[in-house]
Length: 407
Ligand code: HEM
Image 1 (spheres, rainbow, N blue to C red):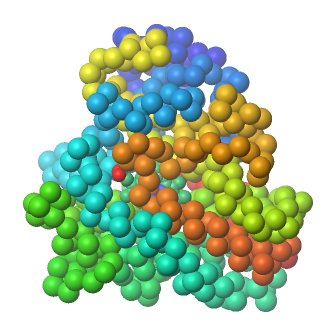
Image 2: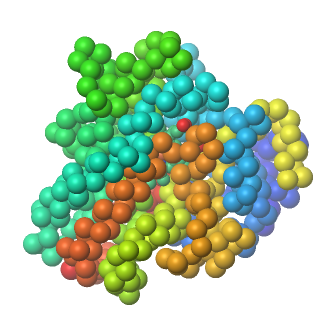
């Protein structure tokens, strides 16, 4: 159903947008979305045209793309649709710094990716398997005897943080601090708390950058600090924007993915058994769960006036690819809400695509695989703690707040 466009205010609808395409979808924030976010995003295919112009109470108006092929095109055509200025973090316009590598476009972009791509390549990541598995087991040792755990707090967050600290070349004893910072920055509904956390993160990363400058090592922070994109030294702001973005991109996304998957595993005992009984199919299991539980979105800005799929878009219009909906596109994934571990392979858009496709995708896949394997090996039967209600965070990364499990 089309919505009446607001007549004025920050969400004023531009004149070139046809009124019949205006919606207030409520993605990331409405009670209907938060009641069951993935179901909500799957159902948009039945209730909406493939491209709508949506605005929200807390998010700027943008063209929302629901179809796989449309997002696929936009992500692969930076000459029409740019990432510049679209980073998921507001910055002071008087002291602006770019989120790197996301807000740098090809061909410059490649020079920045080249600095860290080798540190997260499939080969490098595979070498981390033993230590990730050992840490997963250490965490499980800590709660298996209790017969219950708060999965998000005791497993779903500490594991990715620890892996992240290892690749960044930062000490594991920063784990609690990083969990607090990641949660405070992305989920604090209080702006003052978010501001305070931002100040703490800025101060810490500043110190770390200085330390790595003086004492290089083989971690990602050191690679960035000593990296020379195209042979040029990076400015202090660029170095900060690069290290900071990894922190934003590499933590909450993995937390949310694991937490969503484990709610589903707890609620689907037969499917859990299927995973246990078919260990050789684990890579398809991971890929299908990443499709069904896609946690984030991708923003672009229209470079110049363009007609796209018959719609007139204007320079400066924002576009959001609703990646979870794209991964439920029935034209690409028939019977899309069915979790089918034998689906014909088709690249999922969970990690977006094109030049900016996720730098941490190999690592994230490995983490998800190890978590499923080790948890199901040690605790094959579990449920959501009786009486518990799963609630979801509002915001740009879709995942449950708590995942209380019992066995
Ligand atoms: C399941 C976990 C993850 C998901 C779902 C995810 C999702 C995404 C998506 C959708 C993008 C593309 C954004 C865009 O084009 O607008 C992206 C980019 C990126 N991700 Fe991830 N991510 C995950 C894990 C990670 C991890 C573990 C790291 C770091 C270790 C990471 C680092 C990055 C970086 C640096 C980019 C920007 C790449 C570029 O601009 O070239 N991500 N991620």
